[in-house]
Image: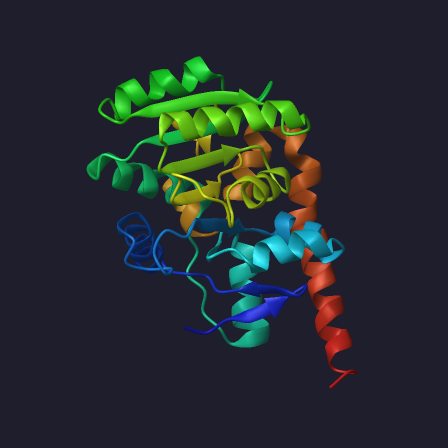
Length: 256
């Protein structure tokens, strides 16, 4: 599998089938050396821009077991500058794939919501009753800036015996949280992933773009239309990110 580095972050673009194979092995103890926490990160332009000047964040991303690509911009950069074809796997698609897998295998899951976020605990529980009525779920609100709130949530997760955890804090808090409290720790949790706002699609607080817009890479335009407050984030993804990619590639010609 081909890979490349962007802003010193390794881009693998693991395929959907490869990710699910690793997840299955993590649960069964047949991969990762057995009993090792499988940290999955979903890379997008926003995350890479944050990592550009944050060495600690780059370390967390590069030490994740799985790195998927959620962002048409990264896929385009891979083809244009590195001749690498990257399979996109959006955070929403990954979230749903893992939920279906956990439901089939009867795995206990935990969802950590950012305190005061768009979706509430009641919203998530209602959505699960409709779509995944047989799954064992723990859903809690957490203040990622409060140590005691984080510790209490992790304690509840361990007491519940969760085997998969989905953290909806947004970047970079969700990746730092999983790295700090679950990576290299003795835990019942086998798989953890930061899902950002993917949970808001599950609860229908946010509508997803039509399929044709998703297929041509215009989901960002739909998000801007539905959530005008996202304009700063979208500007970074569609303008700032390509600019700094071009700057980095230009500089690389002079350091060879």
